Amino acid sequence: MLAECRLCPRECRVNRLAGQTGKCQTADSAIVSSYGPHFGEETPLVGKGGSGTIFFTHCNLKCIYCQNYTISQLGEGEPASAEKIARIMLHLQESGCHNINFVSPTHVVPFILEALVSATAHGLTVPLVYNTGGYDSLETLHLLDGVIDIYMPDMKYTDTKVAEELSGIKNYPSINHAAVKEMHRQVGDLAIDERGIAQRGLLVRHLVLPGKLAGTEEVTRFLAEEVSPDTYLNIMAQYHPAHRAMDNTLLSRRVTHEEYREALDYARRHGMQRLDKDFYPGIPAR
Image (cartoon, rainbow, N blue to C red; front, side, top):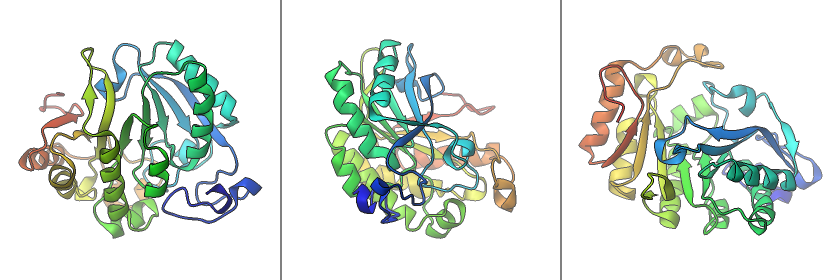
C-alpha cells in the first residue's frame, strides 16, 4: 500500500517507500511530535494514570482552523523508527497510563503495526486507541480489525462543500459515515470497567463550529439511527479561531452559549444516551 499509497481516501498513489510524499508529507517512516500521559482527554481514557498519547506529525486533513497546526501542517517533530515507537509505548505503560493513544494515526498505520510487533512481544497489554480525524479508508481499517481496542474518530462535517472548503478533502461525509460504521462493527459500544476506564469500543468526538458549519443535527441523527444510540459521544465546545480561521468570516468567532446548547438538544432529541460534553457556563459539565 505504501508503494502506491492508498492508506487514506486521498489515494495520492505516491511511492512512499522510495521517499516520495503526498498530501500527508510523510514518506517511509513516522514522525513523532511528542508523547506522554495526557489528562485532558475524555474521562474514560484518563482515569488516574492518564492517556498515553503519541502525537504523530502531519495529517491527511488540512483544516484551516487546526489548533495543532504547528504539528499537523508545519511538521513539528522528529523521525521515529518502529523500535523507538515500541519503546515509547512500553514507557507509557510503565508510567501508569491506562492506554496507548495514537493521535493522527491514519497516515502512519504501517509503522504503528510494525512497532506493535515488538511492543507486544515485550509485554504491552493496555488498550490501543485510534484517535483520528475520521477520514479513513475501509481497506486500512480492515487491517486494524482485532488490533485496535478503542476507536475515537472525529465526525467533523455533514456537508461535502463545507468539508472541502475547511479541510481540503472530498466526500468527507460519506467516507466518514462508512468509517464510523466499520469501527463500530469491529469494537461495538464503549465498554468501561469498574474503575471507570474504557477497555474497548467506539468513542466519537464532534466539535461544534460557529454557524452550524459542523452539521451537528445530522451527526447525532446518523449516530442514533445508523450506528447506535448508546454511542459514547463527546460534543465539544472548545472551538476558537486558530491557524487561518480568521480568513473565513464564519470561523472568526467562538461558538456561542446558544449554539452549544442547541447542539446538546439535537443529541437528546435524537435519543443519544451517552453524552460527554465540555463545560460551558450555565450547562453542567456532566
